[in-house]
Image 1 (cartoon, rainbow, N blue to C red):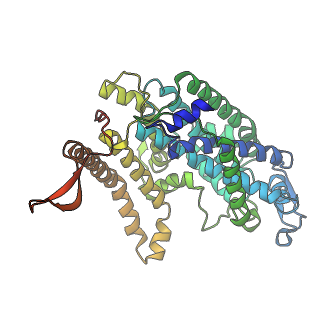
Image 2 (cartoon, helix red, strand yellow):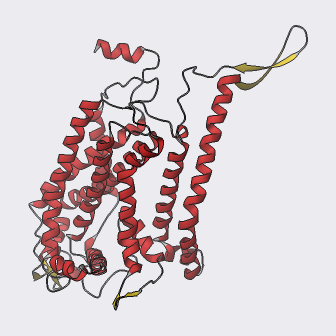
Length: 445
């Protein structure tokens, strides 16, 4: 304890930067997911057999529903505390994906993926995919109208895959769509395989942190956090508060899934919004190749864009190492301005997916602002191509300008705007030195 206090008192020592907390929030959200998931597992039935609803919700009494929908209704409206636990579980999924994405952004913009931490970067990329898969498979389980719409999308994407699409659809759904196979399959993926893989990856990540140590900003000393348990309770408390006051996924209002029923206002969870936007603005390209139609209007937005993005994301440490020829071991973090090209690429990627995410509301934008839906769709088609280029160049120039300004201040001091009169009657402006005179980190491309 004495050594810790000495390090705290030493000049330049500092606690974790606030952005370091995203990884901890992701882990804490996963813990909440596992605990609430165990509770829901004992009450949920993934059976798709049709029964007549006889629960407490009067508007649906006498309606044929699946046993999965019936058990979810029972959890929500008849089990004491069931709705709260179910909503905590849903909110924790949303926060988990958000925390992982923000943590990946922190790793990317600070260069925390460089040697010897490339494997740690791959683990977090894998965790992001697994978290999205957990949210997607979990959203299917209630067998309500929204999950039926998601299954229809999955069916369409699967069938659009050339050569093997029909066979994959049969393996996933069985002889009929949606069939009685997919919900039990997604259930076991959701409650067993995906959580086990995520826990295993986090255990490997913990061993890597102990082996390589933690990253830090130049001039800063890492101090182990004293409030990890407090952060867990804060995360759990916020999830409980959200689940108490903000309703999410009220399946009793949507009703059971039906092959011909969907809601006009149905939207996916936020982390799947880019996929919805890409599908909405993609032109209807259906070329015929060797006598067979090729559904590019589904393949490109649903498989091509996400596949290319996550491939480049996973391989980025290798790509940057090859381009910069930087093979040194890096334990100090970059400020975003110190790697202008990398930061510009990150800004371009955020712009691209931000525009796709916004395009998922093209109909609402057209309706609310009294615009043509055709015009709004074409705007996004052009913006997703031009926007990232503009964002790249603006960000790169900002980073270079900030670096130039910093060098100027270190060389000549900072203008304070304070004018003083000397004893001889002359006036001069007070120039101060830079707040810190430490070494300027080498700029990266």
